Length: 175
Image 1 (cartoon, rainbow, N blue to C red):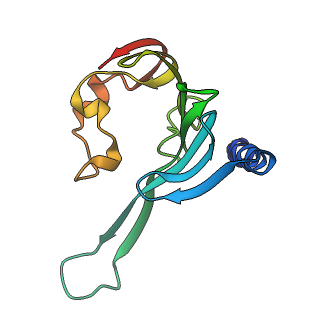
Image 2 (image 1 turned 30 degrees about the horizontal axis):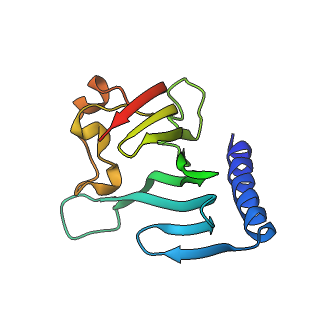
């Protein structure tokens, strides 16, 4: 399980590095608020971003003695995002991998998978695009707002029970 995850991550990094070194005119830059950007003219762009959400809990009994205290560390989310365009800026892609055990739902009986999003979009008009792949379903505000944008790391308990998180299919987006 972990070896397949490391293999996928290593393959993505190897392909991007070989693409950057093999092509003339390719730029690699670390851009604030974007991440690591690999770009070649108007034919290719790849953005690497990652984020981590940790939780530390310290519990102890009431009193001054801290020797009985216990500490717990948890990596709630560790996500790697790859996005950009290929061949033309109208053909965009987005891949998001969840690398922590919580992101992969380890222990719930299903087969763990690091793949959260894998989407391809094509802009048919300036404000219209069609998409295909696995990703977040449009729905309520809580479903679309990233946990990285929340003031507090938790969502209501009912959110998981009543929200369809991600699914596979086609989409038509106008904005």
